[in-house]
Amino acid sequence: MLVRSVETFLRRHEMTATKFGRLAAHDPRFVLDLRMGREPRPRMEQRIRGFMAGFEAANEVAGRENAHVG
Image: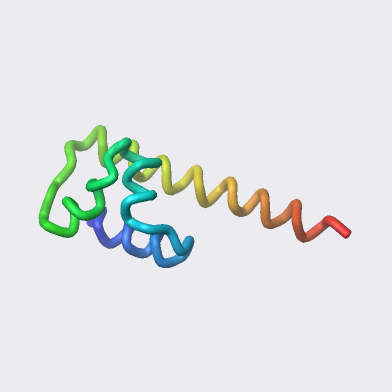
């Protein structure tokens, strides 16, 4: 389920629900609505999953670059 993936992402990255909604869906209430049972259309779900994957990949790259500095 998308809501579980989003909740895991929020915890892992210490991101607020409203910030995630603004960045991923251009809707600050997106996560709150998911928690209340909103089921996004397939295209929106792909967009959200793509955002999370891209964010994770960018963090991995940034983490590796920071590890080599110094």
